View 1 (tube, helix red, strand yellow):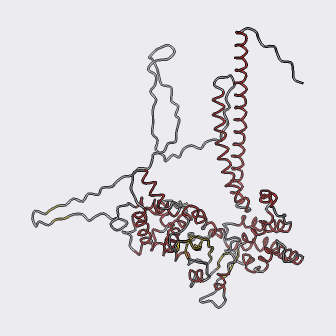
View 2 (spheres, rainbow, N blue to C red):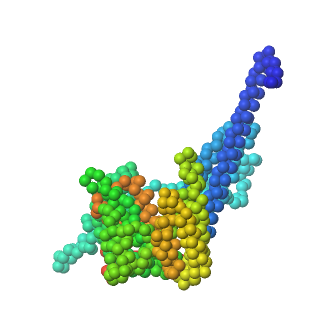
View 3 (cartoon, rainbow, N blue to C red):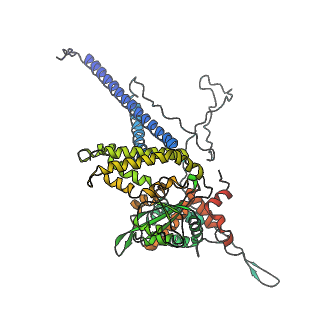
Length: 542
């Protein structure tokens, strides 16, 4: 039952007063609603920020724990971006709605902002002080101090032309004309400086920006650099840097243990794109306390035939950490010359197959199309995760210490896992979904458990998968490689850039310095330009 309505005023003045009162109440209600919305958005943004920080701290403490956790950090960052934008928008709306009312606008609490880096230049802008006291008009003022507000600003990229002047002189005695030699250019008849070339190469191969997009961006900045001109520079630079690529290749293939993997890369051929491959071999001894610098080596091929890894690793022997791809099988042949390669398989691959059958969150997203959660798959994931927990604790220790801990803690768990897998597999039919990942493990059990006998072996092949992540991201930008030689150039350049990243070196700065010094560096001292030596020479050591 609605309450009885109050009688409306009969005179005009009272009606105006009532309308103004109703309008004021409506404005205050709208301001209250805007403030409540701003408070809610601010709280949601704060919760999103705290969730992201918690997940980052967990990642630092425990490392990557699961496939879902690997994706969670990216999802949280995207959610936080939207929550922060919504919170700022609602805060501005609350401030606008509160201007004509007595409702105080909401000011949300933001996380403490870090100070701006000290190396950035500071531009001091001083606001003119009053010449007289605004209260009494006296000009007898004395300075008490100052408050400084810092604002981060950006200066648009600046282009310049460097003019190198070579003066000519004539000898009045013998009439001989002398002149200093012409300056060195990175490319023959070149016009581009090393920093410009390094930027083009880095944007193309590390930032996934094709040359046509770069050319358009430069045109908007007033610089006419056609795609063909940029392509010429890229091709010449790739050839000039080939000796460094050879040194990195020799360094990687001198390792006793490698991570290997491959990914697809479309290669244009006769009007259509063929499914080519990019292969990577990563040397990273840091997990077992090795002091040799890490590096990544890449190759390109038109197909995925086994002859490609055979050619890449021709003459190499050691431990190859990879997936169960059959193309590696000839490398494991005991009669291979000079020696066979030892296979060490990736537990992350095996775990992933179980995880897909036990991913509760993914099933919730699928709705009616969700498959039943497999209790056996979930149990297998938990058992494998116990091995990963041990590995996180011994990461970075020397090989002997790792092998000792594995013998004491991991070996019993592995033995129990094998017994459990064989018992449960014996009860399943061939058509059971969980039978396939079980067979994948059991048929290759010796290669999976080889990490128990050698402390150098890692439990996963994640080093190679991380090295291929750039190509997986780049495929969405550049769509395909223009030719086989284009794919080979990409493999060569990414070898240089990824090796620099693995050694905590800024790839673009390193590449610019290398291009500037390459002509004056004798062949015998070329190794000094490798990223790990360049880092030490530049004073960027630990």
